[in-house]
Image 1 (cartoon, rainbow, N blue to C red):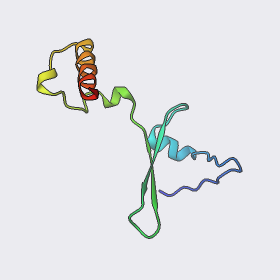
Image 2: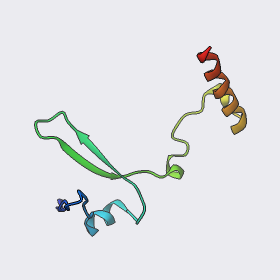
Image 3: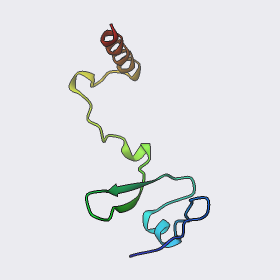
Length: 86
């Protein structure tokens, strides 16, 4: 599917309804423009940005952090930064 949109004088576009439907976009959601500069003519892909809930579990937890509370993880990270700055 190819759809066109016109850039306004304020450098804004309206995402066509069929594209919004295909991506499952709702008002207020973020979108990402992926730009491939490897070709002669840059190619751009538009995709829906995942929500934090959808990203949950996508980053592996290091073995030494499993079972720690958020406060313990945060304190460990801050102490690591303090040690590097010395």
